[in-house]
Length: 129
Image 1 (tube, rainbow, N blue to C red):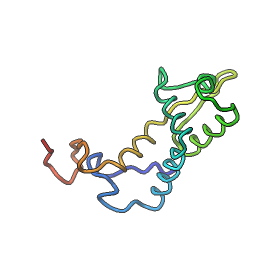
Image 2: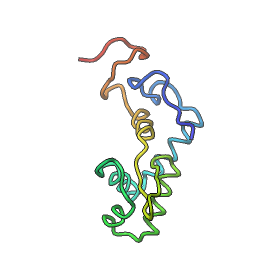
Image 3: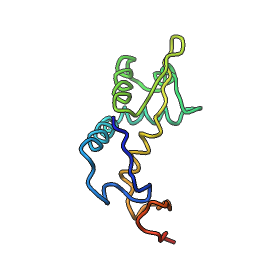
Image 4: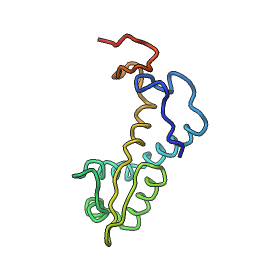
């Protein structure tokens, strides 16, 4: 994953400013595709909203009515897309969301009519009232 970010700051959507590079579009497509499944979107939400920002696979399994192998498959897809990371602690695996991945997804969809964050690198110096 290239983890490419916008050079011009958070106030300017890459989609509205210029075409995405082939590599960045590929990275974003993998993330959006992974989130296109309702189970994976729910898993990401469960992990992100869990106390401390991370969740044990035992906690995840208890809240979703799917088999453990199916949950593991979905978690693997989210990890492969660069949305989650994990660590084995004893017999359990703990998962957490990768903040920079969520920032990439939100930054690429941000429009000029949305919230504007002033930045020295923005092309416009005016901030909407």
